[in-house]
Image 1 (tube, one colour):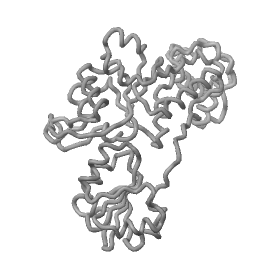
Image 2 (tube, helix red, strand yellow):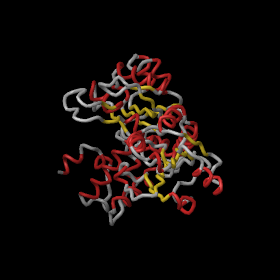
Image 3 (cartoon, one colour):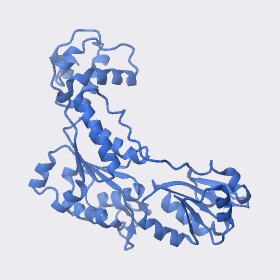
Image 4 (cartoon, one colour):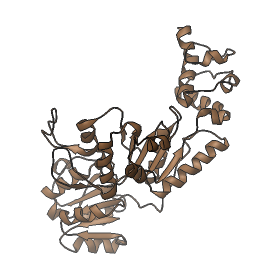
Length: 364
């Protein structure tokens, strides 16, 4: 969507002549634009007329620097301005007012006709992994919240990043629920104002604002306090939240991708996850298989990891890898590949005992 902030029609007339008015919306002020964006979830680029590029434009830039929906903000100017006048950002482009048409379309990102889900980073040709890629594609394009379940080390966060890339973003913010608690967690998630707690020396936005229009990944939700679940539930339902220590109600919307190592049904039955919270985030569930369920993919995984690491030799005895159960899954596999190369064992015949984690203590 292309948005014009202007009090007059001269800029709109230029855009109409250029044929760029098909999805154009015009607003006379940033206040009206902000009200509109609270209700809209699509991506947008903004052209700002030079007569209103003082304080309001700078405030808008600061509020939307981390907004995943913003493609570009073009400031029309006939004077000598710099990015520092309105806030430094790669998303800001200064264009002379009489050169607007000449600068298009390079000034604005081209609109895409649809989402494409990249699942190439999910390695493996087995039927199990083929089904996983199909699930990822369907869930990614649905736009619903999702729970990703599976044992430790199987690649759940990789699946989460595949899903959020469907909206065109490189990487989504990740919150590890096990590392933060209480006020610190709320601050990290929703932001805080200056002086709201010890060490809060300045106002900061939270991850729900940074993920606005995109996705927010919550890792290890099994340890998420029920009090925080309640606040997240309200945010998911209404898009409303408050920064810690602030009375102002803010709005943002983002997709929730929740990750858990524990069986999600067990969490629900034990009431460690609120039923209403569970219903809101479980728009879809993806079960990521353990490595023992797709042993045939081990050689592909080993070779790709060796290539990424830049090892000059390749492990010769791959068959021994297929005889091991890999309780730590792909993470354990990659660590073992590194250890085999570090100890100079890549060309030796290996035993299953050589692959176990305990063997590293014996070897050292």
